[in-house]
Image (tube, rainbow, N blue to C red; front, side, top):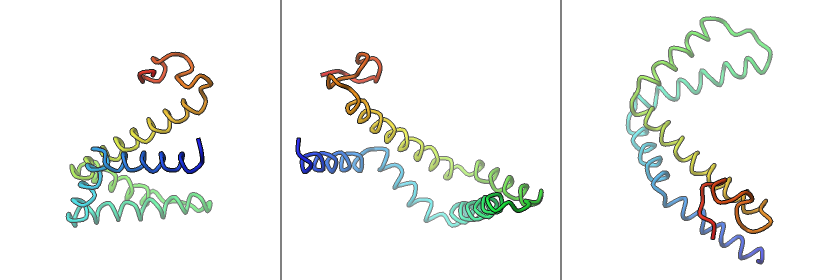
Amino acid sequence: MTTEEIIRLAFELGTAVAESDEVDRLKALQMKLNQDSSAYDLLMRYQEAKMKLDNKYHDGLLVTKAEEDHLRILEQQLTANSLINELIQAQESFNNLMQAVYFAMNQAISSSAGGCSSGCESCGGGCS
């Protein structure tokens, strides 16, 4: 198989992923989040506080209990927000899809016989 054929197939795979239910749901929830100013602001405040703490930890600086408590409160508020929870679940579904795609590709690459190396049950697919 030529490089061009492989790239064409990769593009087709990318198109199929882009048209998946997982991507549709994720995009819809991202748009919904952008329209919900309180949920969006909460998420931005959390990300900013988390980044500040991560940077302090990385730089070896002291992180105060008040800073840790502030982040913990923001995390609790995130967990209490149903839209953000839906978005997190949609992101996890998309991540699971991508992990399955990478796993299948890895199985195909590492398999010398063109199928699953230890039988179809090992990857959950149907051998051809």
